[in-house]
Each structure stands twice: as structure tokens, then as C-alpha cells.
Length: 484
Image 1 (tube, one colour):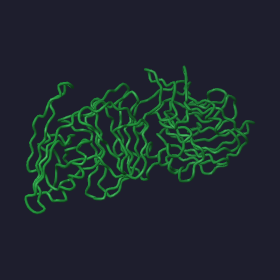
Image 2 (image 1 turned 90 degrees about the vertical axis):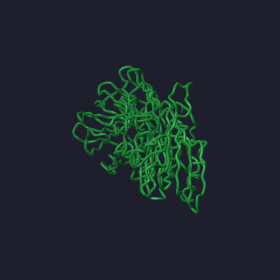
Image 3 (image 1 turned 30 degrees about the horizontal axis):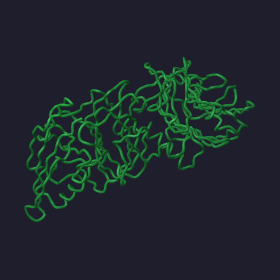
Image 4 (image 1 turned 90 degrees about the horizontal axis):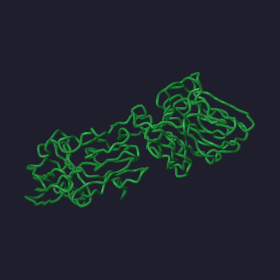
């Protein structure tokens, strides 16, 4: 017998790390579970994002079905679309927060901009306070999520005057002779013409340590110049207008450059004298003044760290590739037109049916975009082994104070269940009934009791079970629709 109607509950066994840029009460870590609850009945609060969760989840039963769902998502949108992206990684990515980054800049967070999206400040997400600033014609433009940036947001530079840079502390952190550092960058060029540079500079022509995604001759370039003007440069790789994940590893006297995980410059000597840079810039080099502007280039993320171990460097490379290069298995723009509510499909995606999946989920928006009255579900389905023998839908109480339509009540009865199925129902559903939302969902088409919905968020309000014979259970349940 093929089961069609199943019950979703919000738990996924995980192994890994969870990182949230903005604290989110709807995702919690308890008892080795990544959960979407508890969610109380009624109206969920408005929630700000982005949230990033990198985790490995394991499935003990290969027949289990894991889903990611966004329930009853109404949007209050001030600036562009919101996105949800689900990425299955070949390696579990360690987020930069876990490697002690000196500075982290993400276009998804910490961006101060005006009504025209002109950026005056880009806050450091590492907690070290190395905010980048711009004024007047220097200001770049914030861009909403785009497929051009693998679903990420970006800061775009006009190629003539835009530059955003740090105060002195980030530059002087790498002052001295042969001080190692790592720079990770996710960017997209619109043109490979001319020399386009960014990195460490000073209020003098020297010193500097610059990365150039193009040197105007079809190559990527790294340049270092010490306080005395002694310089060295190396080129490699290929200039490209593709969206790329770059990791530049300066090891003190030699340098490596990785492009989308592949080595492009390998252990090249770059030994000069003492450097005392006093600023770090994006969008152009700063060599006494702005120079070598990016040509309408867009940057989604920049990470600066001290020297890394081989393992941490690999983790950073994997992180950049997973987020900015790997094609998501789900990349969904969420707008006010996203189907929600009864008689419309909630956003819902089957994550995995194999024994092991390494997955990274991101819910992203600008800080001025919010989920309004939303419920998130990240979990698995309980299959009782057979479909209900009876189902009825009636109207439940109305919520006139909130001026919402009447909620629906679902009465479902199963017969012929095993004792093990009842035990699973009690453990997975009943014991969570007072604290979280569940799903009634179909996996092989629509079910009439769900009013032609494929998935409906519900609360369990009543249940009863009785044995009709040995290992033969009749289960009666009542569910109330969880409206936004």
C-alpha cells in the first residue's frame, strides 16, 4: 500500500555548526536537533533575516523523507526580493565566524544605505569593528539578491569613483615584514578591461598589497610594494566576468591564489621589505588616492583573516565555493506573489531520501525586508504506514480580532496501525503537541481532506487510540489549521 497523507514534525538530526547573523527565535539547537520550533498557535512575529545554517543531517531510515518548508509566508518588502537557497555541499562548510576572521563583510547584512541604495557604511560582521565607509561620489550601490550572484546580494561599484574602505586599524594589523594573511572574495566583473585592484594601501603611493581580478591583459594579478617602493607582482589564472569565489593566501614570502577552489597561482615568491598599510579598500586600490577602479564590479562577500592552518584554509575555500559557486538544489525568490495560504502551495522542498546529506540552508533578505506572520518548518515526515480511513474538514473558530477567515478543523482516523506506529506518533507528535506546528502533507498528489492543498500547517488539538486486536490500533485525531 502506498501512503499518501503523512505528518511532518520539525526535527533534523545534525552534525556541524549553526551560524545566524541575526538571532532568530524560530531556529534553535537543542539535544542535537535543528528545530523550527517551538511555535505558538496564532500569529507569528515579524522576523528579520538573513539566517545561515550549515549542518550535516543523517537519516537512519532510507525511506524517511526530509523537507524544508516555509509556511504562510506573507511579505513586507521595502527593497527587492527575498530568497531562500538550499545547497547540498560536497564538504561541510565551516563558516568564517568559526575561523577567527579579522573582518567579514556580507552584502546581506550590516549595510547602511539611503533610499537610492547608495552605501555609506558596510559593517564588519566579525565583531572587530572594521567598518568600511564611503561618502559622496565614493558610495557604491547595494543590489538585491540575483541569480547573477548565485542568489546572493551584492555591493556594486561604478568603475569611476566608487570606493569603500576601512580605518587604519585593519591595515596596521598586517603591518611589518612578511606578515601573512588570507583574503576571500566573492565578486563578479562586468568587464575585464584595464587594471582593476583592491586590498591594502596607504596615504602614500606605497606600501600596498593588492589583488586584481584582471590586469587588462586577460590575467589575474597580485602586487606587493613595500615602504621603500620595492615591489613584486605575479599573474595567473584567467580574467573572467563570471561570478567567482577567490581565496588569496599570502604566506609571508610566497602566495597562492584559488579560483572557485582550483589553484591559479601556486606558491609564487613575493618577498619584499617592511609594509605599513593604513587602510583596506574594496572597489579600487587606495594609493594616496583611489586608483585602478573596479569596472561596474559587484562584491557579495569579503573575508580577511590571519594565517590559517591547512584545514581552516580548506574550510574557508569550501565555504566560499558552497555559498557562491555551487549550484543550489533550490534557489527560490520569495516575493509578495509567492503562493501562500489555503488552496495554494506553500514553499516546500524535499531535501533528501538517502542515508547521509550534507546541506547548507540560507534564508536571506535585506534588513528592511521581513517575513510577516510566517512559520518555518525544517524537518521530516512521520509515515504511519497507511492512509486514514476517515477524514472530515469543518470550520473551526474565527479570529475576528485579527480579521482573518475561519480556521479549518481536520478530523482524521487511522485503522490497522501497528503498536510501533502508535509509539512513533506519541514520541514524534504528541510529545511536541503543546509547543510546535506540524504539517499534514501529501507525497503522491492531493488529498481531499486537505481542501486540495498539498501541505497544510496544523496544531494537534486532540487524539485517542484504542487496540482493536493484538498489534492492531485505531487512532483518532483532531487538528486545527495554523493560520499566519
